[in-house]
Amino acid sequence: MQELISNLQNSIEIYRHTGKIMLLLTTLLGFFLIKTNQRVRVIALYVLFGSIILLNPFFLKYEIDIFGENHLYRLGMILLVPILSSYALTNVLLKVTERKKRLIALIGSLILIALSGRFVYTKEYFFQANNEDKVYDLAVDIANCVTATNQSPTIAITEVQGVFIRQYNANIKLVCAPKVRENWDEAEDESVMNMRIMLSDSEPDMPNLTQLAKQNGCDYLILLNQQVKEDNPQNYGFRYVNTFEDFQVFENVQE
Amino acid sequence: MLKVIQVLLLFIFISMLIGCLIMKALKEKQASFFKSILCGSIVMMALFEVLFIPMTILGQTLSRLTQIWTILVGLIALVSALVSKKLILELIKTAFLEIKKINVFDGIVLFFVVIQMVICYKYIFTHANDAYYVGMASTTLTTDQLLSYSPYTGASITWSSYKAHLIASLPAYWAMLAKIFGVTGAFMCHSIVPVVYIPLAYVLYREIGMLLFKKERNHVSLFILMICIGNFFIGNHYDTSYEMLTTSVWQGGTFLYNIALPGIFYFEFKFLKKGQNVLDLVMAGMMFIIGVMSVPKSGIVLSSLTVILLGFSFLVERMLTKRKRIDAGINI
Image (cartoon, rainbow over all chains, first blue to last red):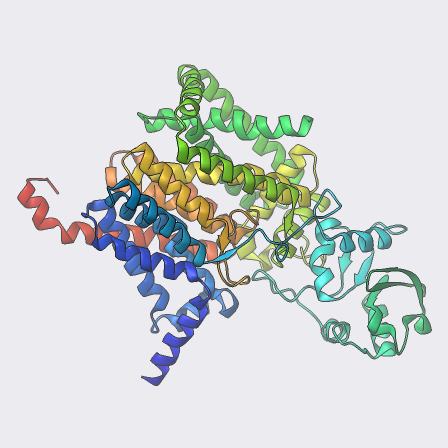
């Protein structure tokens, strides 16, 4: 029983942030106000069965097996919230016949929709890039720097920039893949794993890091300013090339 | 300018021609210009998926796949142009009539959709999943190989180790279109895809509205307005939100949620409600293929669940209203 309750709590937690699902379930209550027909009944049943699949503590274990814990939230997609909640809201609005009341109901509905999520067109989410490909400008600068002499270099860089750099230039090879991956299990040997840990360290063990970089065929090592404060790859066979914002680029000059 | 013409040619003219063939086969009483574009786009994507899997297994290149796909799409369009001349002219005429019929709600929706497209074209919404979707499109385009290199590292891989990704070919579809238009993978995903697929999604929503509101124009317009406003507000949590039609439609999850699943819902609903035209079922099947090609693993599961859930809902509804139908003398 305790496990069931805990599973139910987990399910709610997974979808807690998805206010949109609450929107759908709220708007669906509006179906009680209108005369039902086949379409309304089918959609109400669809949402009911969909919600049962979504929030059923008995299914949670199997759902995690299928989707993986990181992607379980995707199961919420089956509810088709934008379409079905808009259908429910429109039906309720059409029930209101008086013009003034309908306008008030329309405004109320729009407020309800707005409250179910967050306004997306803000600087927090969107940015303007200076390049045609709309990739972070920093990633473009670094990519251009490392491909100046070698068309397809192998580089080691921190997680964040690693996400963007290959979108701009797919000739560049990365030693460490970003952690967030789309069901993609790329084999990583121990030296790559160690390198990933060191790259995320604010004060990496430089002799070890440079050694691993060489082992993994790294042409360029790209580190944050703070990572090279104590020790520097130049002391271990690397040449300083350039700095871009907080990142310093070092080239492996040893054969 | 040449690229704009190329995009318009493929996504409006060729799509419309292919869509006309579907409209003709569906014997649609109210075939529309925009719906034919939607149907044409669906056929083009489904055709790609059908070609992608065997060609990847056979170790063929993106260039070869592009050639075959282009020839087949061209042939279908040519056949359509020959077979449905009359319908094509009719659809072009009705397109102008539809524009004349625009009401206040339609006007507001159009205004908002243009805003959404312009923002998506001018700015960029950053998301970690781009490392896969844009990375894979760029990698496929650069190497000219299908599922032979990792999008994350560029390391050499074999397709047999990534069977789920063999089925989910959406990034390769963007790569092929980028090859046709002569642009980079990132430009294709970040700039062309939103401009094409945001309006296309609204065409689909309009068709869903027409089906659910029995073609009551004002009701349909209000319905789309609600969806349109909703698209300005994504889910409360950035990482687990999928209401991202207007932010990152090139990503599989967004594509699945906002286009593929509604498409499956629409064609299956239409088939089960009217039960007259097998081609609706065929179109639902094509949307299912698109659902499968959008996200590795989740695409198959969610597309299947949508099909099963909707079918089951119809079944239960019919069981619940059986007595009523018998009383009303409806043959069930």
